[in-house]
Image (cartoon, rainbow, N blue to C red; front, side, top):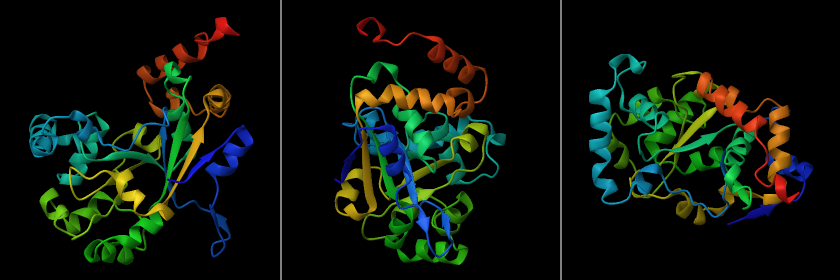
Length: 266
């Protein structure tokens, strides 16, 4: 794994926006998806995997019952991919992993747990454009037709209306990056993106070990977390913005006006 350890805020900025320049566009447009982890030792296991037990066997039961009991008007269209995105969005264990197009949103989640400021954090950066070149034919064809590097629910539905059909698309493992529908302001404000693999047992970090050219991991040392957190607050990357509503407002105010846990030691 290619780890890049930064020591200052300016070094962190350089790494977050590295490789973003597209000379053919004369624009800065990053091809990386970002995921912030408060503890650099965390791997990329999905919430379904973390459920434990015979988690692969209960995937279909979880999703079937979520669709059965949720309100029908909760999704814009009755498709598997809309329901899967909604389920993940509301905390159901799924095979989806959360990502964002925004390096600052990822940095927010790296600094979100004040109780873990004694350990190094990490931002995983995966090149979704290059990873899309490793997709099996039918998925690759849809991206080419759309001139895209990531999928929407509608695009995935064209190829695979169900998870068994999706899992049968390729003989080898692959990863799809999937933009959820704009179900609410939280998804929009977090610039959300999901990754998805063709098996409930698949683990993205293991796949990336075989494709190291797709991955960069920025390690943010514990001693840099408070500076990053305070500067994100000044840039308005806060719970009030990323979790619109009274719950997010309350979380932001409690953190912002609360004392530093290590204040007595300073």
